[in-house]
Length: 365
Image (cartoon, rainbow, N blue to C red; front, side, top):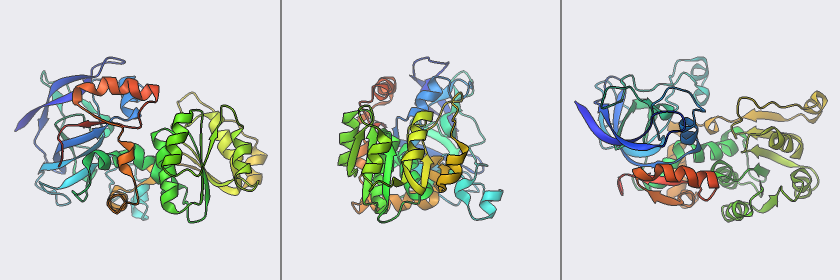
């Protein structure tokens, strides 16, 4: 059976995101059909629209999603119809070198659905991050579905599917922030704010937010930052050192991903401290550092992709924290919108006026 549903598609580079009818097949082996409840509007979707990810247009946008399993392939046992799930783009293979040594969070041999979703005229769609969830239904690999407690608000829970998980994981998993640590986060967009929340959750006692926008710094303070630094008017390296007894922070997270912010992170950390790069640079960017400084300062220089998360481990754990009141995922939901408002949400994102716009296809699970 083929399902005709409404979905958000971008047909060519920089074209507007429009709502169109698409065709979604029933699941085959290893696949799951998901009724989408909510889906966050992420910068990655905007990058797809702009041709910054690939040129495999048309794209079916959306990936930060929560939904309900509608049907599964005959061989699927990990989820069942009726399960409430968060979708992810790291369906680990269980067989590669990373998986075989017990580090499945580094698996890059990940799976997507084999069958294709199409436009009504048969043109094959490329789903964003192998998900494509600005849609009433989508088809994914069963391993892309992580079952969670249905008591969670899907609008908040679905954000763990990408940006919020990337930030929290940069602190918890990549940075290994622990009780009593000092942490500085450079860049207070959605990922940076999530890194601040993650540092707070881990027990950091000094959490320094750095940005050039006072509005974002105010939000950062409300979500766990103990100190703020406007790097437009203050040298962030000197400010971070001053706020950490002259030493620098134990962990500095660059949530911007530019050479200048990485250099700030590098020199704002304590000797033998950790730098985490979670902001995504563009292909033409290069970095130059004195090699003697790299050697002499010691510590760790790490990159964090998807917050080094393992969805089966991290999603249920973070949802548990959310339901216990330890993790305010609701604060990331700036507005709830409909499918036909995605293009407007991109403009709001560019203007920096929202943490997350969330497309709400159904009110609840």
